[in-house]
Image (cartoon, rainbow over the protein chains, first blue to last red):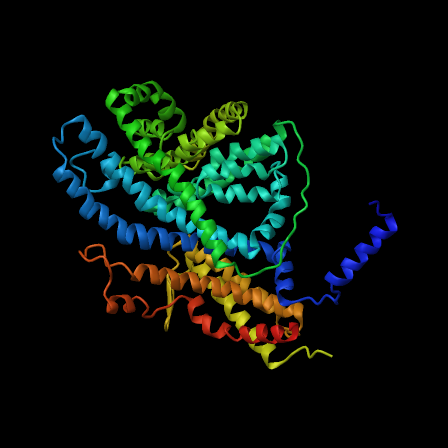
Length: 404
Length: 154
């Protein structure tokens, strides 16, 4: 049967009459609040406040309550002494790999697979990632995240990205693995490359943040400041150097609404499950490989080789070379190792910043490889240059300020 | 015509001024103008950049939002600004209370127990309080504005 054009339009009208109701639009308080949170004058203080709440809840829950309140006591008071008492032969290689240093009083100092490895993954990183994803999901589902994307759009355009780049940037503070995957929301190859490189370089993951909070709480602000400055400077440079387009985006901003708890629970479970499956095995595997490399003398050999660069160019003590090399496998453990080395404030800040901007961890490396090997190689090339230059700049600033 | 100044405008204006003053005090104490401030049950320790400088900036913005919205406060646009200012105070006070709650649940580091005693937990909520926590009950008047707007919207 062939239907004429007029008949079709009549059908459309008939369906519309039955399904669509018309009324007058009336602005509500929610609409006004929605508008105020995207206007820069009012929106920026709200964004600053949202980040404050994000960070405050993160540190109170993950740091004070779960890790310091319960996990440290559980692992250092019960788990470590029990393992040290039952594991045979403290001088053996298997003791070194699985339990670590026999004289250690805390799981941070032990560096064994079943001591530091389990403590970091379950005691530090898991609560941090859990509360991070919970807040991230609430921001997303309440309708604030698209507004933040609109607000950040003009700023991020200056570094070749657009507003939605805020999503992988914030996700990266939880774990760089889903953040690298989230770069797919960016339109062009140029944007994805810039974001991926900046993620690998300047966004510390939840594991690193958790460890930083535990071992150097007073210096986290300074370290973060160094990273934010680096993010902006090198983003700007990459935008100028890399050819490609930086198109505008059209964002559909939904009205504010209360998140539906079933959806929040489902998203939270999926993200935490993904983290447990993809990242936790890498923590344990990372500790295993680092310990094997230490046992085989590989890290010591590399440390001897690279010592002049680290000591002269970056201004950090030679003892940091081992942890900095091991950072490729586990950045969080590298920071924990750094915390046991006696250093000045400058040296601590510089070495922690170096660990962060250093090579991406193995898990991120694998996901970046999945996004394309050419992009990965280019990102690594950029990374080496940036580490060398930025590490040198931090050292130079330290010398100028008289602290290095 | 909407009245420009009403009792609720005056209340919001005063609340905005006090919030702004507390925000600036947080920043000044952190900057070292005073080594730490305690007046009655209010305490500004000023020992931490994140809580006092960053949090103080948010409090100051909250005060400014309330002040900018205090005239013709029952109009939609103006009440939006006031509600936003109130929300920022709730956010700072809420995170302060959440921090006390998280610190109060586990037992002390030296104690062999995992959980704090009830008396120990409650002792954590004893004064002094941060300025945002003290302001919290006074900002609840803003809920009246939200109720008025909700009634208008429905």
